Image (cartoon, rainbow, N blue to C red; front, top):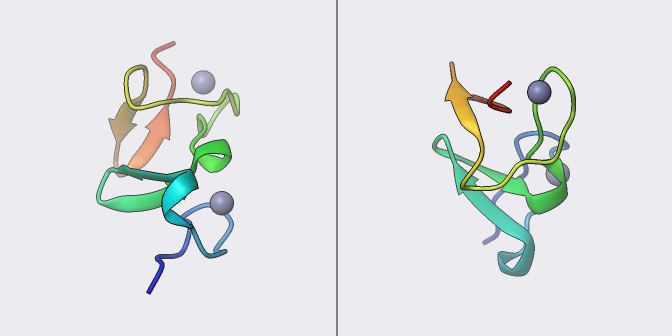
Length: 55
Ligand SMILES: [Zn+2]
Ligand SMILES: [Zn+2]
């Protein structure tokens, strides 16, 4: 069974899955809460289980 995306609540398939902050995201949905910049495993900062850019 595939998990649901924490941002859009749609199914996340393994090829587009990002597993971060104990949640699953589409690659395109894993973006900064504030400026919506797309993030990846290397440049995100987690705060209260939400992804932010380092700015
Ligand atoms: Zn999504
Ligand atoms: Zn940002």
